Amino acid sequence: MRDETCIFCKIIADEIPSYTIYEDEEFRVILDVNPASKGHALILPKEHYANIYEIEEELAGRAMRLAKKLAVHMTKVLACDGFNLLQNNHQTAGQTVFHFHMHLIPRYKNAKNSDILIWNHENFTPEEMEEVKNALKCSRDSEQG
Ligand code: 5GP
Ligand code: ZN
Image (cartoon, rainbow, N blue to C red; front, side, top):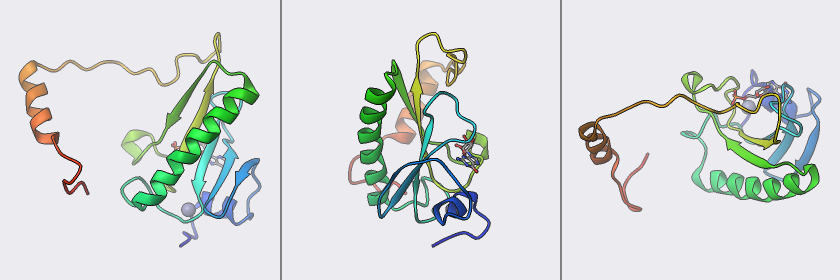
């Protein structure tokens, strides 16, 4: 399950070098080549899935478990002051590499780029909030996708 045109598949196959900080049977974790901060890393499943819609649910769960462990480890080692987990899907949402990945972004007080990940707010009327709530409402057993 590899995509011949995918840069992350090439990294996983060691055809392109990377700074690898963690590896197991299912995942490779590398430093981002254009880091938002010191230690910015990417969790890559070794199997190619384009995005959150394609990745198998259980594997997505294990990716989150790994993110939790690495957030704790990286925060300890880097002595960072905060931490973002980020996961982009489709170009509209900022995805540029179409192999599922999770960003691990350590954050530092007084960092030059301390406003990364801040977005403008949109305003919705109570009726619009009610409408979207009704459209989205689901339960554990609903078919989500
Ligand atoms: P996205 O925008 O798809 O969520 O994130 C893709 C990330 O992959 C970007 O932050 C980008 O800097 C990083 N990236 C792209 N190409 C490479 C590469 O060849 N090596 C590494 N280590 N990171 C890459
Ligand atoms: Zn891939």
